[in-house]
Length: 542
Image (cartoon, rainbow, N blue to C red; front, side, top):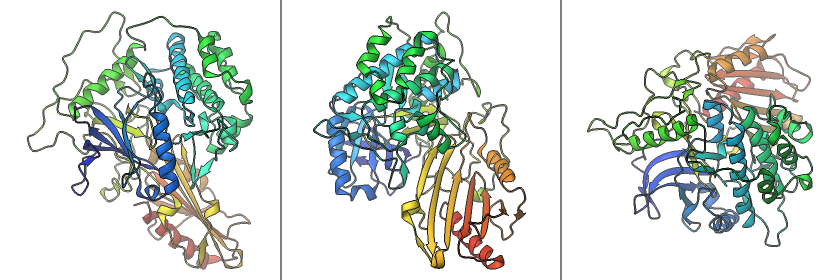
């Protein structure tokens, strides 16, 4: 969470803005307060989309459809304005970890809790599909475990179905970005085929496998391997309890027509007994901790500690025992919402098994930071369309020099004597960080491409800089060091028949790969050209 810049407006519509929560490919999200004091996630789209009349029309249709979705299992829309200079949408504040965070921190759910999760998701999909929407990005990070049950959030890439009821075809990429999350896509979405509500049911099945086993059923060593697994692979469901295995297998059928509808899923799952505490104790502790931390950020006094209920245990996360809320007191000269409140000294930023990377030079700290981190260790992630946002305890190593990557259009890297080849551009959002790849063509069949690969530190994947350093060492075997002060380290790699020279540059947790080929350039001329492109590509991220 970051304070608003002095030059920024202090309100959007009727909402008073308190802080910047985060940003993404289509817009940013701000913490807002309604006139009655209720907190809201106010999502405001980027200007480049606001100028697109088709986008505004689609945004208006999706908002209208989302207003008809019951808020019982979704983050309900409070208000919106598709006609504003920058269209915006406000949705209710939902406190609770994402399913992904809960599984990482507290482990897989027991069968009873997973059955309750499945019923909540199926009920949410009934409502979503009833109004003609397909979620298209149902994944563990878009499923909140609120204190009283499930909330489905982030309809940022949803599309209103056609008025005739026919399904709308989808594309894997749009303006260079992958639509959806590969480990939880349906086969038809991975192949850019027509989507129906059955696509969301496939995603639901993949989510249940992760919730019950801690592992995605299709995750591969690369995005492309994951997509291949989704389309062709047989998921391993041996770790799913027998009572849910058959239901999961039906949801994961490759043929959309063979999957049960959400209404049929509700019948198959059967009713669950009412309960005051619907999740394992460790998950409820995460909810309470997040609520307390948000209260602290807003300057509220901490709630008094209460005795644990019988059978409850103190949650122990992958990073150690959960911390008590931070004290609410602050120096009079400090605002209630600070730009970056560091974690308490006794709580490590990484898992015990992953040592932190060496301290990064101050010149690189925070470069390219366009995704805001929440103070006191809360990360807020939000979509741009209709839906909500979630709060997730996820320490990011402050030594990560880079946090996001530009699209090819945003990077605006100029390569002399080459023309942009936009049709081949792509950007991916992987589990451990994003990638962007851009292409140019030159005279006599010459080509140049730049591949930005960013890794992020997390408890799941470990220290990002260490991972990049190890991968670069493996990829650069047989190569030779490159001079010229390029990043932290750079290597000329052994080339192929398609490349005249290939350069890899690592700067902190970022690796840039520059390839020049097809033009029969040799020796110092080729290397000088590639090094110049690398410097420009590196500067584009700073």
